[in-house]
Amino acid sequence: MSRATSFISAAAIVEIQLGEIKCSYIVQIIKGMAGRMAYNAAYWLQTVKTGTLLAQNMALHKRTMADMVSQRRRTPRVWARPTRALMDEPFQLEVACLPPHCPVTLRSTLYSEGNDLWEAFSHYVSDERGRVNVSKDESLGGLYIGREPMGLLWSLRLAVGGRQNIRLRKKNIQTPLVVDISLFDGHNTDNFNTQTALAMTTMERWYMAPGVRRIEVRENGVVGTLFIPPGPGPFPALLDVWGLAGFIEHRAALLASRGYACLALAYINHPELQLGSGMGISYFQESWKLLQSVPQVSADRLGLLGSCFGAAIFILMASELPDISPRCLVAINSPSGLLNPGEGNYLEKMQRLLPEPKLDANGHLMIKDAILAIGIDLERSLQASGIQCPVLLVVGEDDQCVPALESAQRLEAQMRAVGKGHLVTKLSYPEAGHLIEPPYHPVMRSSTFIFPNQTATMLWGGVGKPHAAAQEDSWRKILEFLDKHL
Image 1: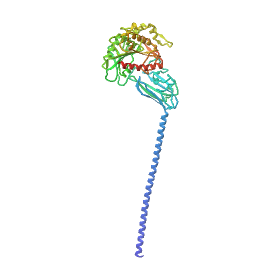
Image 2: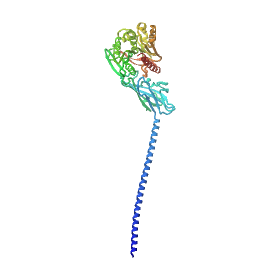
Image 3: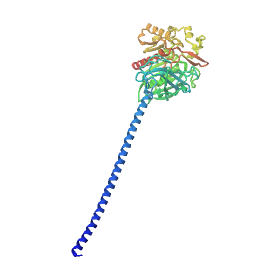
Image 4: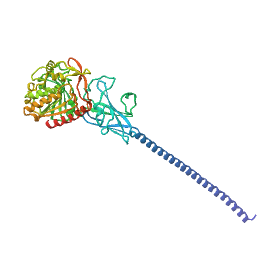
């Protein structure tokens, strides 16, 4: 073989080898590209799967939220506004998310401090939107009928099966009455404990506003509780006395919440007073002086507010005692004229005068007729010419305890006779009874009453809705009267 041939053969071999190397390199490149493509494809596929899953999750979330909203829209709800308020403040009660034209029962309940259950209920039908507005809609049944925004409070009564004939008396004024409002399907009148409520809300009803101070008074023989409004003062002030039921604080606390320093005065049926010891006129004179001496009180802006026997005592004070000069006087269902001026135990005097009280068909004690039997002689027992201040007389014409209407009419006539008729304003309410309380208190036609030496069921009088309306209207006008004259 020639050298040229050998060189060509060698070159061919080298070329072939180089070609194999190139092919191998290309194959590697192709394999690398294929791997990357496979990886990218797998990554892309995973991304698509993840995006699909995410989209599915988002769709599921949206459906879940929609179901929740739809379910919430279908679940009945009841709410009150405000949920925390003073006892004399109204509230709004509404129901939503009911089927259209659905019959329902609203029930209110509270437990007294004696653990007695009080309840009220009313019947409504939802509108075309599935709503009930107690402030606007009429009750079709239950314990009252018609549009009664506060009916679920004033119609409260002691539950069947528990103690009966007991007044709702709040002794711890520094805690609220807790009222539960429950919603039931259909129009029900009993057996609520065996049914499941569709919805419920809770309210707190207070007698003391935030910042009101409560101070127990035990000074110079005077027993009571002083309520002082928030702030430095000085404030206009009131002596507050109830009837023979004894020592009650809730009205004084509400008056302090409205800006008046108020001394709730004990004068009978109190463990720190001997039987009847607080009934003499000097006790009330001392109470007046004590209230004047309170630093937060404006001493020349004092008034008197009393119910029943307490009102009669205050009218006597204003007419007979020159050192007592009230700016104004509020008398609620007063048997004025029953008492004669002078010292001594007024309760004992009254008991000696009264004949045996009558009982009605239900065995309830009726004192009114007994008082009328002895007569009320204002000409003899009251010097109306001594009254120098404006007088507001609040009268329940169905009062079966004392002759409040007859007493008010005679006092008006006596004041006119001495040229002071312009000082008297009378609020007279047909079908309202003796126990005219601040607004929305349960209406009690009769209840157990504890005398110093006996217990009886007293007939107070009053008819549900008219009496409740009298409580609301008279309280508003009492506050207006006090604002004007104190």
